[in-house]
Amino acid sequence: MDISRRDFLNMAGALGLLGLSSGTLFAGDSKEVKAKLKKLTFSDVVAFEPKGKATILHICDLHAHIKPLYWREPSTLISAKNLVGTPGFICGDSFEKYYNIKAGSLDQYFDTYKNFETLAEKFGMMGGIAHMKPIIDHVKKERGDKNVLLL
Image 1 (cartoon, helix red, strand yellow):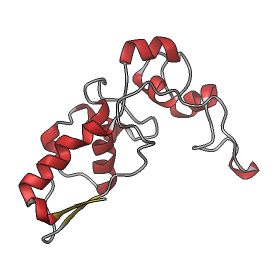
Image 2 (spheres, rainbow, N blue to C red):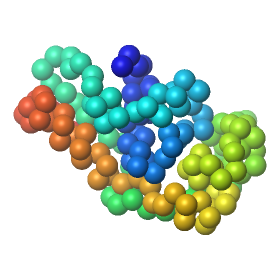
Image 3 (cartoon, one colour):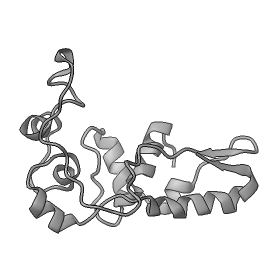
Image 4 (cartoon, rainbow, N blue to C red):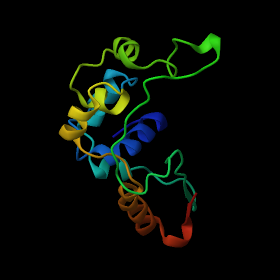
């Protein structure tokens, strides 16, 4: 599977939702990335050629999600005046219109506050660092525990 680093990171981040989704995860991603996510398997995520002897696994932006949880996006975002209405600072109807998000979809649950209770019941909890463990274990086994630095 030939993918860019950005696509790889998007797919790695998607692991926590693989069991919950039909493959659509990130509202801002291109159709090509979403198509790749629909076909994503664990083997695809961990299949990349190591460069050199050491491997650095960097995990960030966890928001302390040790366990999966019900996540609701905010209904209000505060920003500098020049950022109002731009991606990263839009929510609700504006966000859905900008990214063409369909009502009742996983994208709506994952990226907006709209229909939260109904969609939380439909899709369940998301995230959790436990979903990273299989990847970390695989990389350590493949490359050797002493050759992997987890940050």
